[in-house]
Image (cartoon, rainbow, N blue to C red):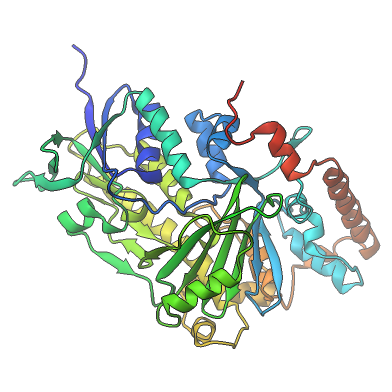
Length: 498
């Protein structure tokens, strides 16, 4: 006899819902029966249009064709994020996805560079990173010879959800249209058992995945799992999004521009630009936020302003009983480092590894929640880093961030870097050494000392090695085509992959 399939019910669509459905049917479709419930009457956030390189790896794991996906979602490539006005008004730096220089087991590259600079070398740390220089030159290719570039994507989130829906339904996922009217639980176990829609349809399941967004209909409203509020560290609680016409060829990076009471994003797609402002209602009104955003737009507006309200934080448990929250239902961190879709994909990898194929899943849920909490806190601290390193004194907003108490692990990391130049990857292997270095140095936190290994070579020999590496970066840069030209050949929007 064939073994009965585990019934999975995904509540909610959008990027989180359809990415969940597609991932599960792609990798566990033989043992799962998957139903997704969504209503055309309920909108999705749909503004998570910038990603990080982990998405490339996830797509490869799920068998997604890069050219097909990019053509379907109006996508461009992304080599990093340019941060304008964060340390001081007028400052600018790029947090790139590339590796800087050459690794050493005893000391990091930035420490060798600091030794050379202390001895008269006149260049920038960014001269040793191909991805960063390619971003500034508006150049791109997926690889040069056998050397792949580290990149991510800018994409149309609504088109991405539609793309995933088509692939999911073709693979066997059942979609049910309707709003969830009631939720039933087992009186003894407390597990969810059935959803009833406003159409009268009832859907029974063994595992329920909550992708209902900020509302958290299953995990929060019905199961009563609380929410840990982080707004004392991250004050922003509002965003406004607007799409505009393109006025130039798309750049291969996101721009995050700090303003007096928030920051503005600019995400270039093939045929339009995604814009938005993130701000705190404590320091800026909706009207003033919209005026600030409009003053800094390039190109004609294609959409009316879309207002979003949120509370930064995390669900106290992302997995409770037989319900797992994915996406915004599990928590929210502002998109400063483009981690929204990343958090969905890592949640799905974690879920597939720990999937509850039996009722004995308490230990699995505990491990899932531990890993989720650590990941959320790590990203939270990296975002706080950008704010806390500011030297701006032009508003109460920046005064708050510059002077506030920060989480102890972040304070320790900043202090040891400032004193000794030592930096290490985070606990969840998301932000590498180079990421921490680029943000800390980019915003003016320069170490007072650096590792003595940088003095093991005669200074002339060190300078020669650095010059040779810098030249190799420039040689590689010269081989790259323009970003727009590469897209036109590789993945033009609307084209079918042949």
